[in-house]
Length: 232
Image 1 (cartoon, rainbow, N blue to C red):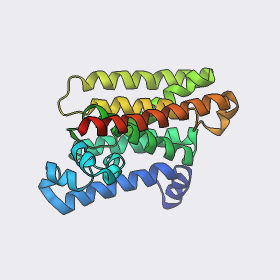
Image 2 (image 1 turned 180 degrees about the horizontal axis):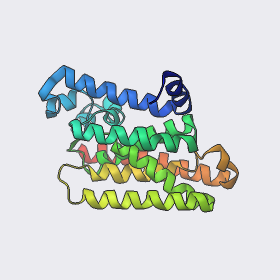
Image 3 (image 1 turned 135 degrees about the vertical axis):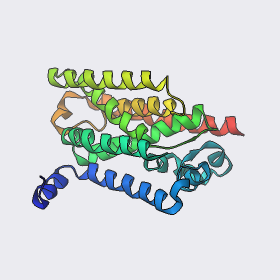
Image 4 (image 1 turned 30 degrees about the horizontal axis):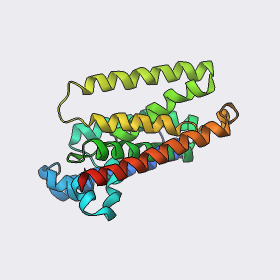
């Protein structure tokens, strides 16, 4: 049984995971207490910040909708699956990346997944932390390839398989934002180098870090621009 002291130590070691987890939990409980059984009705998901392309196109200042969907969920099963994946797997990944780098990879890959959804399927209403979770998986898969470290290569292969299996399952599920999952994974892959763990910093060149970061930024900006042009 975890004592208060043990929890404090665990919190200090996995600060980013717990902060993201508390934010995710807080938003979901707010959805539920504000709307009850109607918490997952489209209009209420929209009001809580779900991604909805037509709204962004009509109101460009609402680009914040590329961020907020990471914390909005479409039902208890959706929330619980993502929440416990974040808590149990996120803590392990945070130990490798460090809190600040993990926090950045999680949010930025989630945003990238939402950008890809906005670009490919702007008409859909979507939400969920899956974009960011796939980003965690993608970043871990990429580390092994970048560093050629045998231990990270083995772990990276496991996460690569996890991504492939989950995407394959998504193909047979209805209502799943597979574009967001793919985008999140790509975002994590692109962010692995610029936000690489300190222990692997000397294994990745500065040129690699700058190149992957530039690809992330330029591709994200272009997708947003093209989405607006298509919408108009």
